[in-house]
Image 1 (cartoon, rainbow, N blue to C red):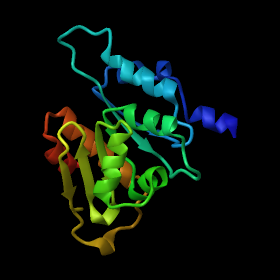
Image 2: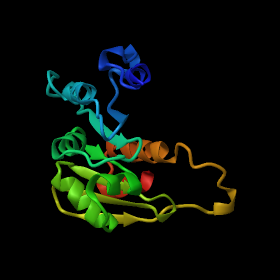
Image 3: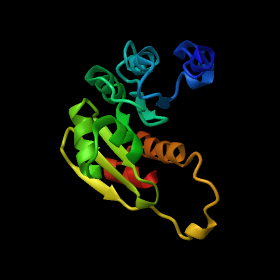
Image 4: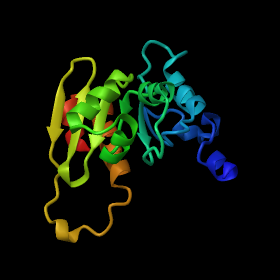
Length: 179
């Protein structure tokens, strides 16, 4: 309902003061209704800063797959809103159709994503740099799958590690290993 959806889309001004200086933000959005205002506000933190200030990185993750096709405009809003666009495999397919992970990455990059990271669970991840055209396939690290109890939050944990790697200055192929 509208009330619940509004709670999931707080304005950037409501960030606690200690969060406002963050070097990176990871935001989950509904792929059919991305909060363009919030994304633009977080993205705008790179403007009006002194030249010595660090750049703020923004990671955008759909938190569910699209239940119906999204318009090209919505897809471009999703993909171009941040530095990293990171859907899981099902979310990527719901946005751009069937294809190999590398094909999904290229289609999402064609829609405006700078860096695309398609998360594939136990199959690892595929990351694509639109600027260079390079694509890396990174396997998952799981010593003993029988000990896996619940996958809830794994995507967020992956995205956090990936962004931590980027913020720390790691190359793209190394940062995805942090994820």
